[in-house]
Length: 341
Image (cartoon, rainbow, N blue to C red; front, side, top):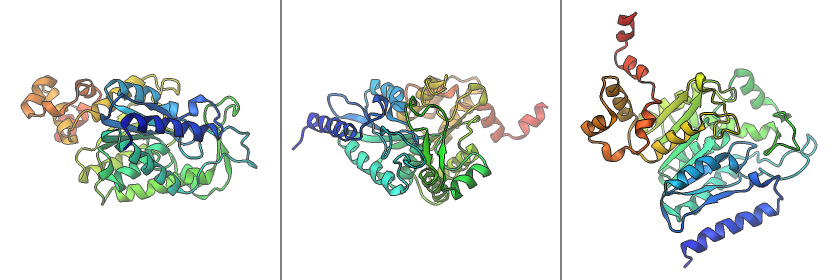
C-alpha cells in the first residue's frame, strides 16, 4: 500500500512528465503543489482561469499552506502549451465541457487521499468549474470558493457574440511575452457560458455544497448581477453560502487573484477566503454578527452570545470589517433609511 510520501511524490512526478512533454510556455504554467509531510485537515484544490496559468493561485495557495493545509494547483487541460498560436493554428483549448469536468473529478479523487476535507476554488472559468462540482458532486467536497465565476458575459452583446460566433479571438497584448494564452477559439469559451447558464438554473432546485462567491463592481468580463442571483438561489437550499462584491473604490479587477494581475487588495481577498475555509457559519449568522456590531457590540461578545465562538475562524473579525452592515440594517428595517432622510 502506498505511503503518503509515495502519493505526493507520484503526483508531482506525473505532472512534471506530462508538462515537460507539452512543452510549457514558461514555468508559471507548471502545476504547483504545496505539500506538508503528512495528511492535513483540509486540502485545497484550485482551478485557474480560462487561458491563464497555475501561478495565478500561488499567493492564496501559500497563505493556506501556512495555515496547515495541502494545496494543489493543476494546469487545466489544453492550457500552458508553448507554440505560435494563430487563427490557422489555434490554441489547443477544449471545446467539450466533459474534458474539464472529468479533469476536476480526477483531481478531487487525488486530493481526497491527502487530507480529511477537500476545499475547491477557481477564478472565472475555473470558478465555473468549481461551481459545477459544488452543485453536481457536493458530497465530494467541504466547500467551494468562486472568484468571479464565469456564469455569463458582462453585456448582451458579449453574450450574443460568445453564443453565436465561431471566430478566433485575441485578448490583445504581446503573445510571445504573455504568461498564458492571448487568443482562443470562441467555442472554447462558449462551453463556460453554456455551463454557467445551466448552473444558474440548477441552483434554483439543487442543494449545493457551501459556496463563497466573490464579485467586483468594476468587472468588465462577467455579469455581477448573475452572481447575486446565483448566490440568492443557492442560499435558499444551502444556508452556508456566502457572497461579497468588492466596491468599485477597491478597484478590484476581474483577474482578482494577484497583485501582479491588478488587484492591489489581494491580501483582503486572501483574508476573506481563509475566513470562509476556517469557519462554519451560515450567512444568517454572519449577518446577525454584522447587525449586532452596528449596535456597538464587539465581535468576541457577539459570537459568545450566539454560542458560535467555536465555529468562527481566526480571520472572521477582520472579515466582518468588509461586510456591508448598512445594507443589513436597511434590509431588516427598510424604513430606517427613510426616517433618517
